[in-house]
Image (tube, rainbow, N blue to C red; front, top):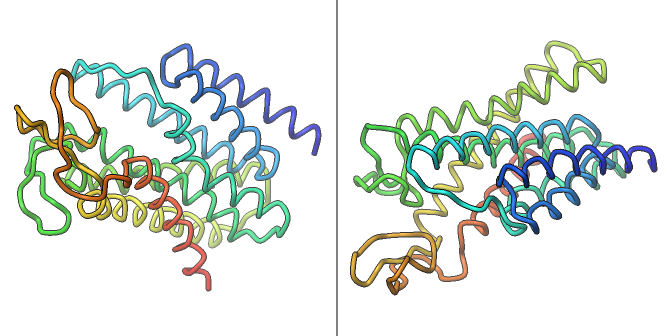
Length: 262
């Protein structure tokens, strides 16, 4: 286990540090990513860790492409964003280590698939030129509003979950013996539950997530501030942030996995 700990630390530190240099992570995000990555590798092994890295790389690339297109530049994910997307997988990895039930391993990967599904939906869906609707009442809403869905975004969400499923199966097949029926079963569960997690994210975004409105411009944002403008709460609960929604939806996706097996 000590060897796995050091391997996990060195790999996680290396990936996180490169991400920090590329401004995909803030300094505290770098520390959090290293900690979670090390823990997941130590307790969950390469299969879960590799799925996490696949999510991180693909989502970071899509975010950079979107920012470049929209001419918006962030400082990268901070520690809260890292925890909201990786804490559930970390906890299930630790529980899997002690109980050794593969459903717990799948639950960890599903939480990652849910986060990836949501990120792909947001980043690729923002490029959609078609109609964007509120997931609850299907009324037309502006692109980028929490709870908004589109045809392109929904397809991207499904493909995001499927991508993690394929990565997981590929790594698993290289390290352990697995039959074709089990491959199909695991891929189906990860894709379906990961996709459901993204839908839950949209439902929470449209109903409970705090959204603010600029007093002068009337612009709707999920952030509690706008440049040179005061904002007021427009809808949702003030303490339900986007990070809270990400955490809840990834946890729900993992719980769906357990229920699916039961």
